[in-house]
Length: 218
Image (cartoon, rainbow, N blue to C red; front, side, top):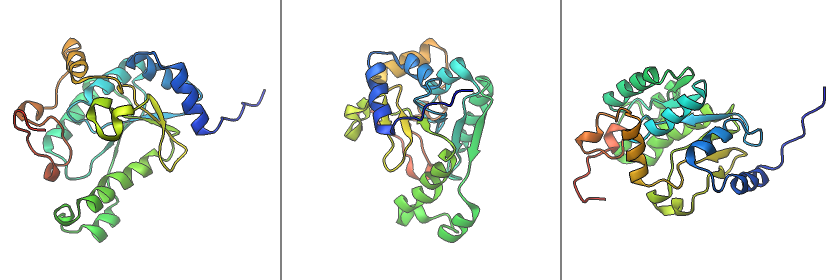
């Protein structure tokens, strides 16, 4: 049995992937990414937030056994936890992995659950970014819902990028989508919205750090 050729350095693979899929649509980028050996074993990281249903639905159509990583920070809205269970069942996702912050780390760093009041960055590291890094350890790539229209460093976002400080690839199938694209996809596929969206929450994270947005407000 012939040996598989070793993978090229991750930066070279990302450059090649972006060149090959530059003119593909989001669905095609995702479908190829889940099977292209240059990408590696990939997982979808989902917050089951306001727009998460788009990629969750695409994954359910392409391959519902794709690993879906959901982090319960233990500070989420009850509606988010209900939505996660409901959507996972509705889309028949077969490998949803629910992660939690380390109990020992929480007891040491935030025993009273008020760290977000004094140091929200430390709270996020404790409850989200740290557990996410652990959950991603077995994977060579992960799928995000980031988009260029979200601004900041994302305005030049490519479909594929090297995750800073790692050898993992980040896959951004919706990089070129607009808010209208998101809305139309959800409407056309009759997908359920997060229940808090109708209450004025266009972005939904942990309850202490999420607020309603008034009409016209950024």
